[in-house]
Image 1 (cartoon, helix red, strand yellow):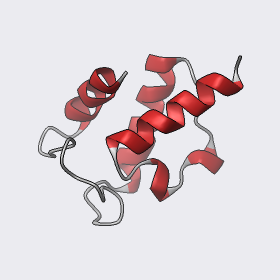
Image 2 (image 1 turned 45 degrees about the vertical axis):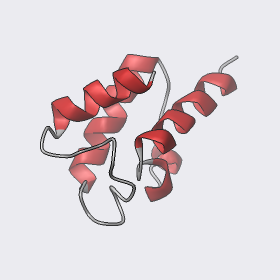
Image 3 (image 1 turned 120 degrees about the horizontal axis):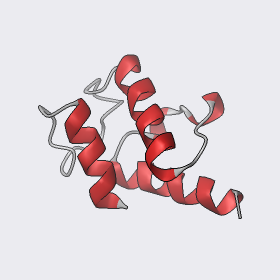
Image 4 (image 1 turned 90 degrees about the horizontal axis):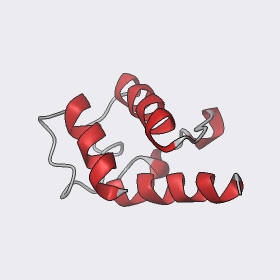
Length: 78
């Protein structure tokens, strides 16, 4: 899952070192348009529904946080 998330992120923002950044939102590395695009791509890739309530900074500050969000959403669908 992590590799797919990184692939999506690199396609959207190839200029960012997603493996080492831990404050993608807090340091304003990603903007609101990036987040909407990322959420849409993650929805499609992992068959989840990231809704407005999930668009919190802590869910997108790191790759790990995004992975945890996707896992949580997938478990809710079970």
